[in-house]
Image 1 (cartoon, rainbow, N blue to C red):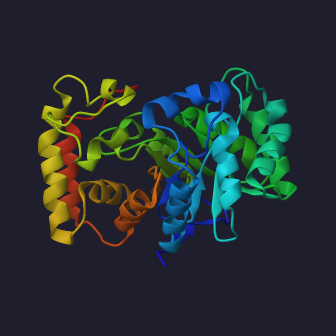
Image 2: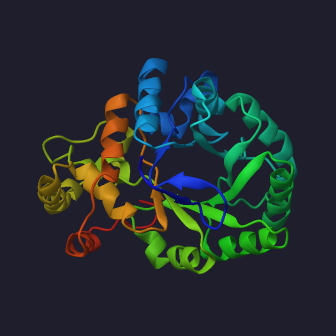
Image 3: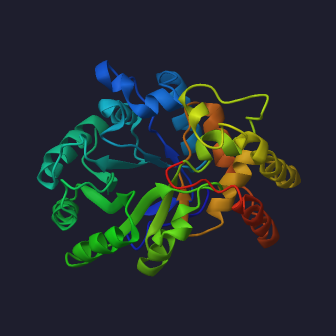
Length: 322
């Protein structure tokens, strides 16, 4: 079984890799128009998702990340159908864009009902928003911790300053800020430049990395002659000459992977895992994807390989918001 470590300074032990379940579940009505569904595709069906669930747990990848907002709660409901004692569930507040901090207790209860659980392992604020007062929200989540409904507290898409604000509010209640979930990959390095990674080190907060494969750009599957389809074809580096510029990086990922019998995607995930503060959560919609992702836990990169990847990707780093 792969090693576990605490999430931040919390008592929650987590694996070094998780599963992003953003697209899981069958959306209905307007929830089918959720941007994630349009960009990444909808559910491949409960049996395919069960295969991803089973393969992940068998490999020790037991942390599944979702949110109340994903497809109108469909992702949480799917995880609730699969739920077992082996799995750790991370979900997020709010369920709607117009929620305030005071809506949190009711929305947490709704999430727990969809997940078929009496507690959530990691409860995260999905994104900072002017309607949500951060200290007020952190105090309400601390109440949920005290009530046994939440084991660890996280945030998502928070700046370094917002992290410190949340950390200070929770500290007054004796609760650690365990994580900040932000976009981070070999191609998206904004956390290194905007102070978030430094704040994670300072506050002993785990950085949960979403889109760790840069929307599939780091899988090696896409080339100038095999382009991305759907909405993602408009994302960097899929548009323009981006895939041409990506080719040397894909070649390096493949070269390093060949030494270990690994794919480019596994090498890209391993680059993140080598930083003990970072926990990537790649998506997996079927057993094959989940098995490939888990393979990132079974080897190590050398310092020279880590440095080579850093150097090779420096010029192609995606700009903020890309």
